[in-house]
Length: 394
Ligand SMILES: NC(=O)c1ccc[n+]([C@@H]2O[C@H](COP(=O)([O-])OP(=O)(O)OC[C@H]3O[C@@H](n4cnc5c(N)ncnc54)[C@H](O)[C@@H]3O)[C@@H](O)[C@H]2O)c1
Ligand SMILES: O=C(O)CC[C@@H](O)C(=O)O
Image (cartoon, rainbow, N blue to C red; front, top):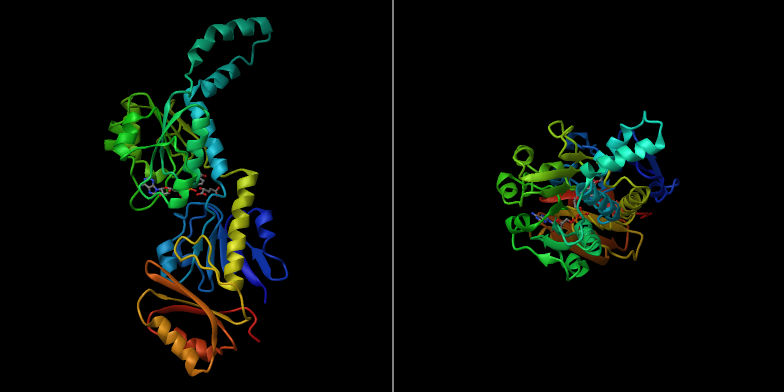
């Protein structure tokens, strides 16, 4: 039977092509899908059918998915780390230029000249008026990058090539990300220190309980007058009341963001874009391909890559019969699962077990078929969240 993949946003065809039509049906409506593919759709736990085995986010942020509740139900949530990083980096480059030059005001001014028919007169007028749109150069200015993961590290690199000084802050920097980072990026000891020394500050961290409202009145009071804040991460990271106060008080010169909100639209000191950081053909393809391939490998082999709540785990297939067991990360459960197999005279050929926080996940390759009643015995064990027989075990 073909597996059903429910799409809750438009997902690039290049990604959907990774789910072959003889094995997968893809549609925006299914009552009992095997998996969900989505982008920014706000997913509620009550809207996830019991049949769902996995969720794939074609993108980086997973704050639109109830990840903790999915973990309790044994559903791995996948994302596509880095797949849209270049698209965001390029938009941040545009943001820096919009924040340093009179580009938008200048374009709007030129539009006011639409009724002039005399070219020479038009030139005279605009040459006289262009002083209103004078900007400053980015070279030699300091950019603070908050969050130095896939996007932040590319933004830091781009800013260095523009001749900016770059200061970074990331308290949870992975070893891999640290390797990617140029040695020219200077480290700020804390956020206040970064906020106090930059001309431009750009946010590239996830929204989590710990980062919601992170950019608050205290931090904003530390900025140098004339600082420009760019937010291409998430709206919730910036405390909006504090932001408006900092702009009104001329503490902050400008706010450039990918997240419009009624309190900010129409202000001269704010530039808002409609969440288009990842809206390029290339990023949409990359994210969809990564998400679709990860979902497929999970459904067909139980392997997990780039999950935000499950351990990453890949086991090469040695037999057609594979079990996946998700359980609470406490002692003795795996032993009990293996005892059930031993009691049934089912030989284990290969297995892998990993845990992450409260979840333990096991792949067990077995020599002979395990019946539904054997699987039910495992499911009945205290602490077992789900058990799945994967692949053709006839
Ligand atoms: N505008 C858009 O369309 C768009 C597109 C892609 C991503 N995003 C947002 O950007 C975020 C970052 O994306 P990414 O691909 O770089 O993710 P990433 O996971 O590669 O990097 C995030 C980095 O933030 C760091 N971090 C966590 N908490 C921090 C804190 N308190 N202070 C400083 N750094 C902290 C992490 O250690 C990590 O290195 C995503 O979570 C998403 O919300 C927005
Ligand atoms: O899917 C999108 O368009 C936005 C994605 C972006 O916010 C992300 O977190 O990757």
